[in-house]
Image 1: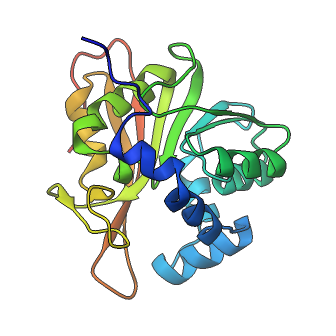
Image 2: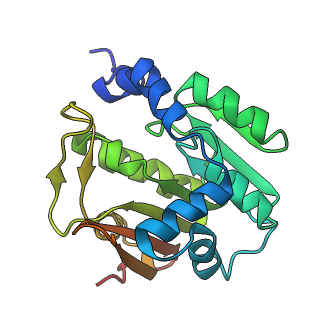
Length: 226
């Protein structure tokens, strides 16, 4: 039986099409505008969160963003002094805009289901609002790819829920889910330790997001999580 292409999923087809292009156009932010959004939404800037979570990560660390869209998160890291930046993005329209903004970064078109880099190639692999768009049937595979490519740190910022739940997204089903992603990593991989997590409560409603940092310990047999 032929293996289904990593691009031949319902979610990939949507994000690579006009819906994904509209998403990119809606999120055409500068790092300063992103900071303002975070301050209004959570009471803390994204830059301050980055500083808090990346204290142990040197500025020459090799960093990969999975699902970088037009590169705003990478651009902020570049402004913070990080110089060895990489990204993968499934949508060609967003990728071309990211390349224009980040000419010194290595950005390629690829799926999170099959990251085209060697095992342990990056010091940090991170997602920001990407795992929430991965179908539950594909989530363990994406997490395995993130885990495979990281030699030290897995960093995430995603919607949080103690129990998995699907959320309608702009009139579409099967495009957005929330869960405890840090816990999923710990349950799936015995060599990861949850180093830091911050639950960020929205200022205007009851939703919660989670930023988390996991450390890989290749000699560890049991994960250390909550």
